Length: 143
View (spheres, rainbow, N blue to C red):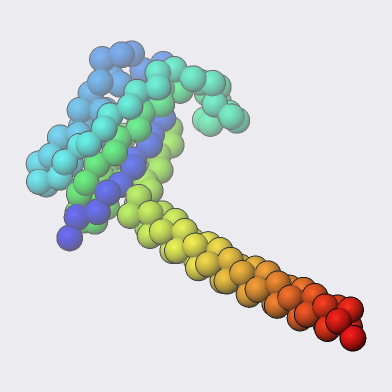
């Protein structure tokens, strides 16, 4: 069972471009060897960190979107932990977020339908009240 994952990691700033490419290549080959598919590779380059990590103020940001099996992701995370050049990494399963957003969208649509029905019924009640009042006034004026 394959799922979509986004793997983000930060490589130390003292690593050269070649070392960053080696880390990226290690990640992508791990995914492809296990019959996974790398959908998108996004290199942000060297950016400032939000807070110091291991006395580093900058790092090379890389994000990989891939479709793979859960066991592959576990192996990949273990390899990223062992790499000295990787400061931090995070793995997000995109399918779960899509399911949550779809559930919320469906719930909001249901709430909107209920609100619309209640507003329609209220407007119909007001129209019928106004119609009955106008009938009473016309009956009173005829007498």
